[in-house]
Length: 315
Image (cartoon, rainbow, N blue to C red; front, top):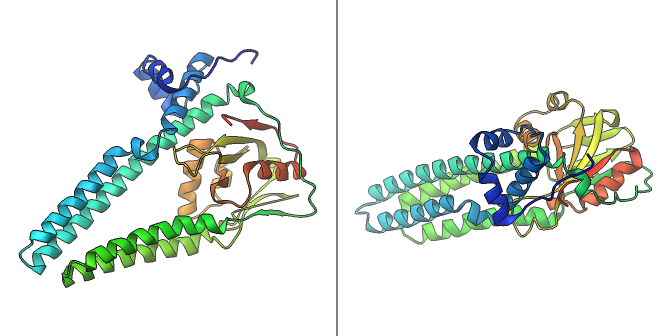
């Protein structure tokens, strides 16, 4: 492509997106590439504008409902005439809370994945505008493993456990034994499920990515792909509006046959891999958000083992 249009941002991107028409917008969000570079630029600009908004702004209805549920639960628990009525309110609140959080979380994730897919599909047509120098290959003498950063893992799991503990303290301070025991059991089961899935599928003590002369491997999932099946590497920013994500990137190893790679996955990682295919076009999309090293390190290590084209989209 000899010419590519500028990519709009902010309010102009939103206005240009609305001017496309409902049918064109629907096709773009479904991941269909548009032949017109002008339309592709609008799609990229709109996706980046929306995904750059803070998470609380993009998901404000979800947060309002959760706060309202907490307030209602507190009022009903305070005015309850007996322990049995208080426990009934606790059960009702937990059920509604889980439905709201799960349902809104799924909807929010689907919307973000659709925007990521639209950005990556459309940006691939515009990549000459955004190309940047590729890091020099590393001088390596064996496999290169990319491990989780312990501080990042502690932040993720510690924050969640801290929220649960604070909530438990607030619950036990009410002096209603039936409600306290019930909610303690519920949160205990939730923590047990998270611990089980982490130990079985994530395996944070193993490196999530290993590169060697034979190919790419994901030790926690026992997935491996030879370099001959990798067509190119794409590097994109981590979207989502989080401060922690600022400057972080996603390294995607594009493969010739995504379905053949997906056949190696099992359980929960298979769902994440399918979501990665939808958003980035490949099961192998690695965020450096939780890693000790960066996307440039991954690209440089890959260059030591294979000569692959590298595209930087939006970085």
